[in-house]
Each structure stands twice: as C-alpha cells, then as structure tokens.
Length: 211
Image 1 (cartoon, rainbow, N blue to C red):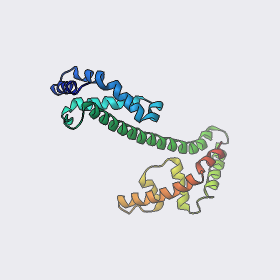
Image 2: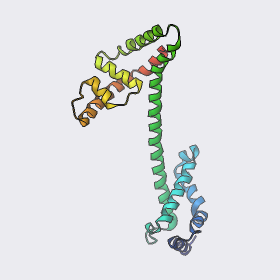
Image 3: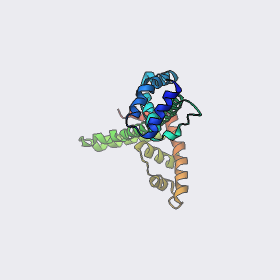
Image 4: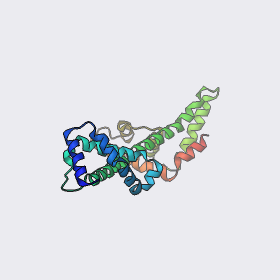
C-alpha cells in the first residue's frame, strides 16, 4: 500500500467512518498477524489466539485514539505493528500473572486436602482413633523439620491454607503491634517456614503418609 492510501485510511479513521475499522483489518490484519507469528514463534505454536487479541487491541486503540499516530514519524503499518507487539507483551505478562495466581490457589487447595483427608474418615466407627492417629503422623513428620512449637504451628496453618494475618499474629503473640508491623513479622516467619516446607517436600511426604 502506498503512503497516500495509508493517509487516506488514516483520515477515514479520524473522521469516525464506521467502515474504517473493517478496512484497517482488510489492509493490515493478516500481515500484522504474520509479523507476530515470526517474532513470537513459540507463543504462536502454543496459542495464536493471543496474537489475534493483540491485533484487535492495537486496532481498537488506534481507532479510538487516531491522534496517537503521527504520519511524519512512521508509516501507519509500522505504527500498528509496534502497537500490536506492545499489546501482545502486555497480554503475555497479564496471563503469566494470572497463571501464577491460579497455581497459588491450586497449591493452597492441595494443602487443604492434606487436612481434609484426615477429616474424611470421621464417619467411620473408629473415626476418632483414625483422626487421632493421622494427626499424630502429621505432627511427627513436621517435628522432623520444626523444633520450635511456634514454627510447628505456623507450618500447620500454612498447610491448612490459613491466610489471615491476625491468626498468625496470635500464634506469634504480636497482636499488640500495629497492623503494618504485624504483616511484616508474619510474612517474615511464613516465608522462612514455607522455605523449609518446600525445600524438604514436606507436603508430598504428608500426602503419602495419609494415603
């Protein structure tokens, strides 16, 4: 497409022409998708829907704010390519954070299942004995890594999926501290205990014990 045609299309977008967006896709859509397929080859193989989403965002962003494009700086095609790449990077980052959040939630669910597995047997005739034996096994395993009673209790709370700062503050006996200080202390202790749990694969060992 020559530059004069590009400028004509830009003027249509500026005027708010209802067909301008469709013409943008016709002129540039497939070409920009192919550019993204080359520059983001691995992602394109996994899920090229992100590429289409990025192009849609770039085109809509330009259509809604056409004055962000300066014909004296670059061609309309290059402007849209750069916008699509930027939007794709944002989409990748957003989905990465979302995936990490989902993983965190899944990990918590797994941790809670350790304690739910103990409770599942409460309907049996010997439920109290089974529950007592299961808890005893858990405590024995945890004591291999935590000699301090406070750390032991924090480990149990982490495995149960406890999230409330107040609950940990009570165990640490720091309820009188201001909220900010409480959060700092709780985070410091939780991080230390969590590292021990992860390093020694305690969760996996407990799951095997309770099978």
